[in-house]
Amino acid sequence: MWFKKSNALFMSLVMLVLVTGSNAGGIAIYWGQNGNEGTLAETCATGNYKFVNIAFLPTFGNGQTPMINLAGHCDPYSNGCTGLSSDIKSCQAKGIKVMLSIGGGAGSYYLNSSADARQVATYLWNNFLGGHSSSRPLGNAVLDGIDFDIEGGTNQYWDDLARYLSGYSKRSNKKVYLTAAPQCPFPDAWVGGALKTGLFDYVWVQFYNNPPCQYSSGEITNLEDAWKQWTSAIPAKKIFLGLPAAPDAARSGFIPVPDLESKVLPAIKGSAKYGGVMLWLGQNLAPNSVLIGDYEMRLLDRSNAGGISFYWGQNGSEKSLAETCATKNYKFVNIAFLTTFGNG
Ligand SMILES: *[C@@H]1O[C@H](CO)[C@@H](O)[C@H](O)[C@H]1NC(C)=O
Ligand SMILES: *[C@@H]1O[C@H](CO)[C@@H](O)[C@H](O)[C@H]1NC(C)=O
Image (spheres, helix red, strand yellow):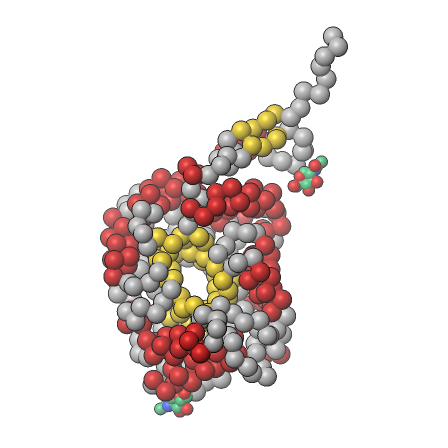
């Protein structure tokens, strides 16, 4: 698993996160659909994420029995995902908001009426949020909110679902966060109406699998135009740049790391609505293709960061000196050591 192979990389990321502090954009990641991604607790323990969207609840609405799908992580049919509660709590203890993402690219879902929206909201409240049910699929952990990744069905009643869900914030003493992952063509075909309610806290726009508004080999205009529309028209607290974490994580839209750092982030980070980056790992990521760590490093605002000084030379399994410097993580490298000197 690539998480294990790249432990050293993640360690340096954690250090970077610690020294860069709050000026950096946050990172949201989807967890649950990739066999190589590690456990939820491991994902949160990297210290890289502010939001984790558990993906997905792909079956709900129109009177269907709701059913989560977490790929190979656990079997919801035998109630085998309740053990995730302790992972969820460990994430939340680190200050990470954990959302349930409903929908997804391959689901069976739509709402047939406002009453259906109310019924789904009640189900979500009782089974994943602050309510009670004897069959909570993820156990007794109380999630922070619901993420709308609606990519099919119809465009109706999502605004009602958002209203009913946010109503629970007032009835309980714990806010129910609402987030969404619309496609970058503006307005979104599915949840464009719901987003106008102003009830969504964070919106991670999918700037991938959408050639008309994504970055493409040096050409930033399409992405920038779409970004301006999203940030000026959507009354959410923050807008995130949604990207594939690696070239094979999506059909198109991957941004090579040097381009992300030198062109894309500088063009959008100035916006007061900029919240950070959302990463989608895809379902069939090849172990060696993961560039997520590189992304995270570039996201951090190095100009405001303290520097990291690094000792190199005493560990046979560390990278070459050139590779160490090429990570761009370090301001100082101490070649260690000159152990024999003095006394002639
Ligand atoms: C709409 O959904 C409800 C459940 O919320 C279901 O009972 C009803 O049969 C559905 N209506 C139609 C016309 O399919
Ligand atoms: C070298 O680094 C690896 C990976 O961080 C670590 O497991 C190992 O213990 C280190 N070896 C020495 C001699 O410090």
